[in-house]
Structures are given as structure tokens and as C-alpha cells.
Length: 283
Image (cartoon, rainbow, N blue to C red; front, side, top):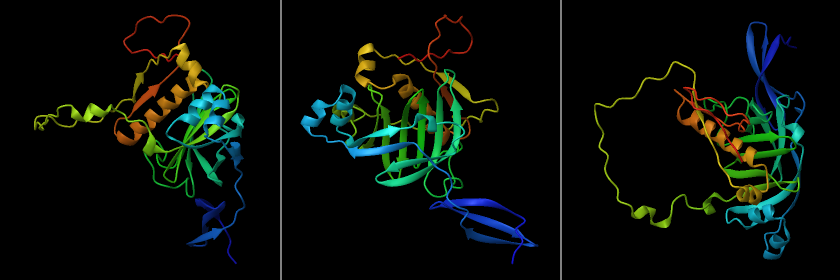
């Protein structure tokens, strides 16, 4: 019989918790059941949506756009609980391909306009897996932007990409994306442009890492009313999601000196010119 002095969590697997038990003068690793950890369901899934021409034509415009996109592998309307996306919820349950996947909170950013961004890692050992400087695993993660009753997000798990989008009628849709069928980033004749060799210059060396706070790049995003209407969801949240993803990519690629992108709604009162660039994101 052992007297447990203390323990700490080593990892999570199938809702069981592995612990490292300290007793007497020695340590033992004990896989034990400490019970199911409480997970808050983010949404309840519905049947897969048909992508037939008839079904697509009958859908609302914003859903039509999603269903007709070549990169949409499948889509389903979900009943979403936006209230689950809060700093107090450390674990969220996501239904992906018929599986209940746990998203473990990595951090939550509060935005200036009252919205928030919830970052989490997915799958077993989400709390212990080695990740980037940001603490978020780029290959198994969820980034969720909550604005009122809407949630706009990107989910990556097991090599697949999912997008969570609000619709104009208040519903949400979960889309699995076929990345092989995404639109080309450049026109077909881009490869015909001339290429020039850029030899290295020994006089150019790597700059020393900055010892100050991360730089903040302020971005203005402009969208026409037609584009906002065609999107149908929360355009401001879509921009915030893009900024959050840019921050994660920057943290992954530039661990020595990351940049921080920020986006806020434009102020009604013009700001005086300052030495720092101002931020305004409008939709």
C-alpha cells in the first residue's frame, strides 16, 4: 500500500489521466483512471448537406457559396453553443468525422471590442505535446473567434482542415476542406515569369534578436458592402480569425522575434497622427 504525497498530470489519453506518484523516497509512474474530464460540447452536428445542384439552389446565398466551392469536401449545419467559447472553459468537445475530439485550451485573447479568440490543441496529450513558442500545435489545433452568438473558426486535426462559419440566418456550418482543390494562389502563367538568381552576399548577416516587446503591425482591411453581403457571416470575425492565424504562423516561423498583428473596429473619432502606425479594420 502506497501513501500518495502528491501527483501531477503527465498527459491525457481516451479521457483517462496518467499521473506520476511520489511516495517515500521514490517515484513511480502510475497510469490511473481519475475519471472523465469535463468537456463542454461546442456544437451538435446534423446530417451532411447535399451538394447536388437542386439542394444548392434551394439553400440561402451564403450557404450556396460554401456548398458550390470546389474545395468543399463535405458540410453540415451544426447547432452551436457560442457560450462555450470562454476563458473559463478549458476543454471543448468537437465532433469531427463522427469522433468526439477534445480541444484543450492553450490561451484566450480578449479583443478591444469585446470579442475573444480561443486557442486550443486537439487530441491525446494535448497538454504535454511539444509545440511552438505560442503554445499552439499548428497541425492539431482550433482557433475560434467568438463575437456575440457567432463563432468563426479554423480547426486542424489528423491532417484535415475544417472551417466553422456562421450563416446569415443565425445557424453555423462546419465545412471539411479538400486542400488539394483549393484555388491556385497565382494565375496559370505565373510560372512563365522570368527567374533571376540571387547570389548570397557575405557582407549580409543575420540581425540580432530584438530585446524589446514584439512589434505590432496594424492592418486596415477594406470590404465592399457587396462582399460583406455575399459572405453572409460575421466579416469582422473572419478578419480577426485571419489575424489570429497570421500571429500563429509568425510565432512558428519567427520564434526569436515574433510580430503581433492586431485588428480593431475603426473609431468614430479620427485619431491624431502618431509615431506608431494606427490600426483599423472595417468590414
